[in-house]
Image 1 (cartoon, rainbow, N blue to C red):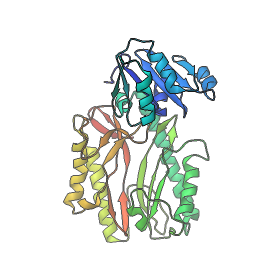
Image 2: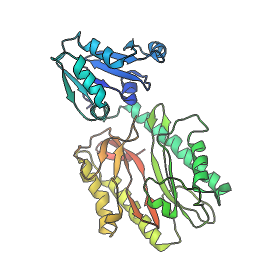
Image 3: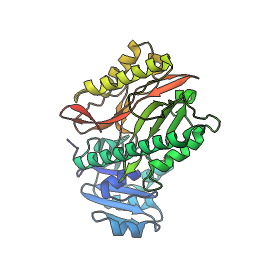
Length: 350
């Protein structure tokens, strides 16, 4: 169950937290919540638009956001204010300390707002599903393009065209900059596209991409073989190279087994252990060099994290990725990623 927030007092600079709270955000604002009272403090560039959009928050126009926050707080009787120390600068923190009444304690709580929205509402899940569907459609259009004209295009050129399909030529924002790697460049989990590496028949292509729909992110990774009939981004892939096929099948088994066996009540570490166990048992454990997954919503990476160190207990309505991988330096890399939502204690692929 989502934590009730109307009794909490907190301050955030994060745009996604702002949007979650009041349906509007900008790149220079502080959002202050004092019980059920909300304050959106921003400068004159954004204040008029904020006033037109916001219905349940007071818009404060200010040339000095920290000073304005302190003026509001010093008129209250609150004792504690939560803030995220990963967001606020040292200089802003010291200014807060200097201007606030001594009776108000600043309480650091990293990623506190992600904890508040870790369980998704049905409306949020619907938006993530729509985002992922649009993402999948873009994958199909990109595959069609590669089959028509992708031969001998460089990673850089493919990257450029992929962005056009993902955004529907500017209609949607990207969740993150796409990751696209051919053969040995795919061995870098977050590879940068190369101008010299060109895609040709018989190559492996790793493609990791996502878009935003109404601010909510999607994320998907496929590793595909560019055979003579073309390329597709299904999970059924047949490689000519037996070693690549073996690694691909191991990664696919790790991903599908994790999705099948994960349950609410498990920790992120326990779920990570399912995927990692399959890959380690196959002898490739040292080549699985990142975590199994991450939460997704307004942020592309949010809680819960599915990693070896994650103690977060999984509950229904959590949404996260499952994306094991094996990366053989200077040769090739394989990653397969889907998003899941936990319903009735089990994972459903979005």
